Image (cartoon, rainbow, N blue to C red; front, side, top):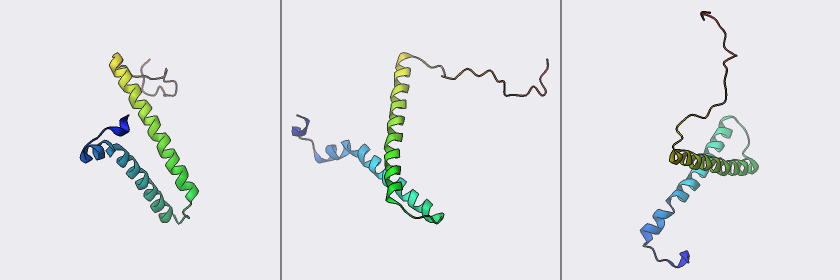
Length: 98
């Protein structure tokens, strides 16, 4: 049903803007990897490029999940920080008054 909706061209292109930014970011990451390998005198490998692209998409999914979780917490009104229990046993008692 959605494919039969007629949009003006500018609106259709605007709706794909996030996808264009995502693809551009993948290519920029691959270019950065190529420059890094070139600077350190390593050989370019398609295997590394594919792993980088796959890791990029999984990284974006994790960020998206974290953002949705943050919005859910905000809507619920939870504004406290989530931290693990930390008794501070690693700290020295130098200068502490007992």
